[in-house]
Length: 230
Image 1: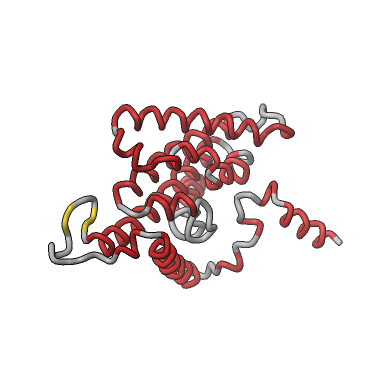
Image 2: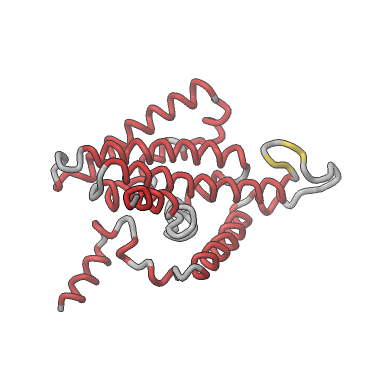
């Protein structure tokens, strides 16, 4: 029972409490670039989720085999393999989506969410919790992109997933399809998410370095630990 509860917590933490985009502020480049439409957001979110789950699974499985001195290059090679698979799959079955995602599809390799979960979680936990962590973080990332994509597409062009929602006379506010509109929606959603988390007794300030996925290889975190030891 305790194990099921723990797995559920690992899965749900990525939705609100440790949402990779709105709480940990990771993967923002792809979020802002590909949230101009809901369809692009879903494509990017699902591709990233697949890579997250697979990389967490393999890295957790090999965590006691991969030498500590070369773990980051090993992670990147493994992640690149899964990204190449996803890229070929999308190119074969949805060339339009591949064209829409552009350079951001191969750049999943260096997405800090994936590398962060590999270094901060999968490298230290068993296989099953790592899979649930990847699934939860991926779903949180996908939901964030989808909500942003729906808002920006609806206000910017009056459609959602290509279906006309607003009256045909609606002119559309083009600003929301441009970077400034993306930052505006991103800021509003971040404020709402932080408010919800704070209402549950989980303020942003308490996340700290201990909850950062890159704490293990961060110089700032290391300096804080040395200061604490003194």
